[in-house]
Length: 508
Image (cartoon, rainbow, N blue to C red; front, side):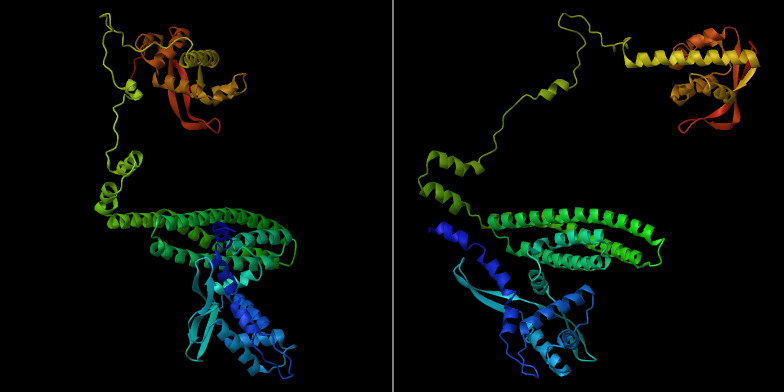
């Protein structure tokens, strides 16, 4: 077996020993020898695991006041029928166990091992329990699970602790599908603890970024680690969004079911689940944002610091000059050494974008002046076809209007629209051109055929040219009314009164 294969075998030896070191307190408890009042041996390892579960439950319940006496009461309730001890005996057991998980010196437990990857004796420091608060009145010390304690709890249940939150999300969805709302609520509490543990790890990682990046290799390792964390948090955030929608649908379904039932507890539980999930999602969103900040700003700052550290330690005479003059280098190698100190190559090139630059050409090569006028709109253009259709519409409306005027003498716009709605052209009420026609008429009131020559150069006047021909020698007067008509959801227009005017009327 060569050296490369051995290196692959022992790779990550310290991380593996760190996982094993978490169980060292439990094995230390297993080595204890003590009997109860009936001379039955007491298994301290099992009581140690019960202690971990007790403090984990207190963390789920957000109880910050859990001490030795509380632990003794718990052990008495769980094991009292198997272990024959009085209250003082259980309190002594609880104190021994807490002292193993958290030494009386207040220091972390140390674990010594030989790191066969580095060839050195190394130390691992673990903290299962940590002091949480102290009651001066009762002289009571309260404890809570530390990060290593949480990892030990998860290690006794499931593998892959880095995916613990994702696993909880999957379990939560299954519990909601089965209607196990109490279990789902507990699952959310465990998710909250996972998020809190991740927050502590992110803080430590930020400190490590500022302290440990001293080489490109270390920078690349932390960069890959941050990218993995970012992708995992992104997937977890997407799962939270789906869970929130799923909880909302479940809440609506449960609400519809509980309306016909007297038991409202399922609906109360799903409300609590919804609220707690929103809190956990909020904390996780903050963590997700923190990972983005670390990935962009902190990592960039560390890289910049590494760059300036390299500049400060760089010595041109020693690192470059001595290498060139003291060591005979091949020509290709010399080019590589000198390349960073040579100016950047510059090549004068013609850009294709210059064809779009402004050009002032008034005559062509033959000396004739160029025609710089815009092309006229051809008969096949979209604008030409639109104007043709608009003229036809105006002719149709004017013919119908004059027909009603000849029958009634004067016409209100709302009466015209009511009649128009019953005709085969009712679809035109949804077109803007229909309403533009009445606006043009009102703007040019009174309307005479004599005005055609004055307005032939205006675009609206050109559209109304055929209308003047229908009008002949008559005159139309359009007067606004007070009411406003809502023709459809899209258009509204003010009512108008259209009547005949005198041929010799003057505009006012």
